[in-house]
Length: 58
Image 1 (cartoon, one colour):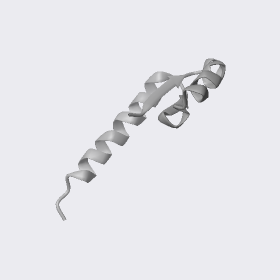
Image 2: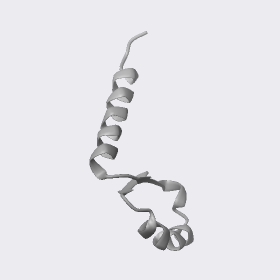
Image 3: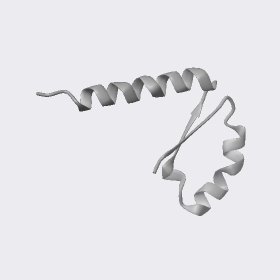
Image 4: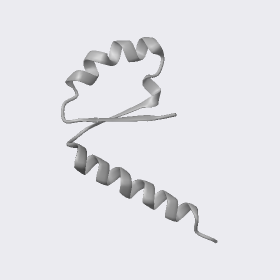
């Protein structure tokens, strides 16, 4: 399982990072520093692209 966290500031992610590392889940979190709407638009585009390419018949 992967988690994508989106925030306009990395500040709070950095505050929680020691706890994330202690729990051993740092590799499972993808932090995106951005406004939510542009970041979500990009994620939706990427997932659609993966789905379309994944179902192509060669």
